[in-house]
Length: 235
Image (tube, rainbow, N blue to C red; front, side, top):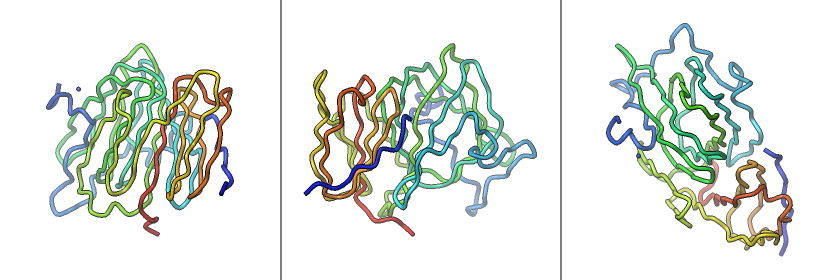
């Protein structure tokens, strides 16, 4: 049975460089980290040149992120939850400074490669950003809005280009095989899926049981990442 596909658009130092760019633990007693007077709050509103909402439904919120080369961004806020990062280009490193009571803790995101993926769970993040690299950084930040089934507060997993599959209770990430010049043939799944082509960032939403061919000319260049959502939306 073929369901419809919706095209959404074009869219390892501190502790080994804190390899997943993990924010520090939350303040005692679960207090919300303080917000400085210079915070822009929601980056979708305060930093529209860097954060752009591309798609949202009950399962995901897909935000395209761009950091200019040799640039800095003021403090902004990201919500608590599970997030999938899909990197669209090579970049050397990015430095984050998270707001904490009594000071800041600089953390470094290690170099990334186009097509690399990272999955992380975290509390609400208040941080600034510095990209000292001579290249920009482009990626999709996918907030997963489904039940995490008690994954824990600090799951951090980098999924290299050589790794074909990663799964936990909440989602499964795979790299559908492709052949040059041929369309991508997507096998049906019992779960809804987000398909992302890199480095273009074009992405597609597929409903459960959906099966679809994506023409090679729409594939971007390097390959695809498929995220299947195994649990129901929280709300």
